[in-house]
Length: 280
Ligand SMILES: Nc1ncnc2c1ncn2[C@@H]1O[C@H](COP(=O)(O)OP(=O)(O)OP(=O)(O)O)[C@@H](O)[C@H]1O
Ligand SMILES: [Mg+2]
Image (cartoon, rainbow, N blue to C red; front, side, top):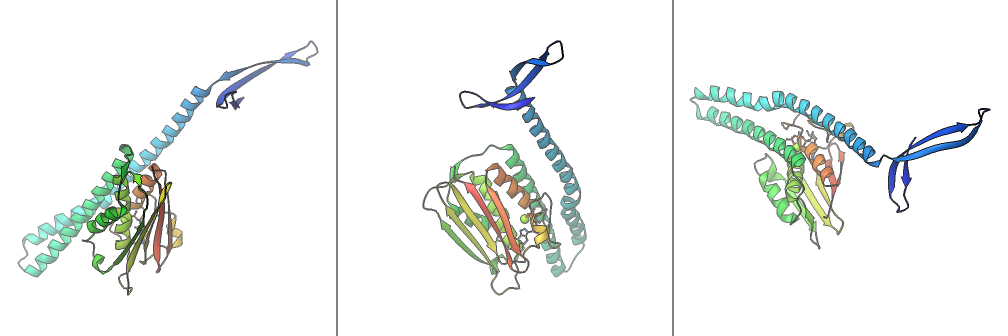
């Protein structure tokens, strides 16, 4: 029998207990003879193998999904670019040429976003965590500026409220990726028909953690999709031209940083992402 025994120094060790009965001539048990063997290292190695196996299974299934996505989603903008450059060659009317150039640009941009996502995913799994002190206002400003090109961005009112009386340390690069994804989603899924499309970002830093809320009054997400949006390649809207990787990467990064994330949403009203990152 296996169990976890407490030693005199208070530490627990996995042990294997063996016991054999000694019988008298009538077959009655008169004595148990047993031994306890310390199998702690063996048990830890076993647990490590099981978790490595699970991790490999997860990586393998992600690889299958990647191959599928590359052959479908990644190919679509490339096919568009090839088709439109071919068509554009013979166009004489400037107006049509401009339209074709816009479409080529948008397809190239989509491809660029896919590639950035795949690189962010790979960086998060490969690279060790770095700790830097950083300024949230600067980080959010940079993320906002990165998405100036997104349609409708100029109509959205951004409010940023950072309450950070003490320094915050975490992995700046990874935090940048989180903000880039949440802000680009808040812009992409905004509702420009509303009189006041807005995005509010609030940050509160304590000694233990930073709590960040990214709120928008955009199109919102149906309750039944809310659990799924963090899954790899999941898209909850037919309007998206994205790869469905963004929130999966956000979730994986937050997991690596030992944080937590939660989404709340009301279709037609808007969406809030609340996440906590430990102050390291
Ligand atoms: N702020 C939001 N408001 C409404 N829907 C959202 C919001 N953020 C995400 N979603 C929904 O969740 C889905 C998954 O988001 P995710 O960022 O993973 O993928 P994407 O934006 O489609 O593509 P990518 O980010 O890879 O370019 C989106 O397709 C969208 O339907
Ligand atoms: Mg996205």
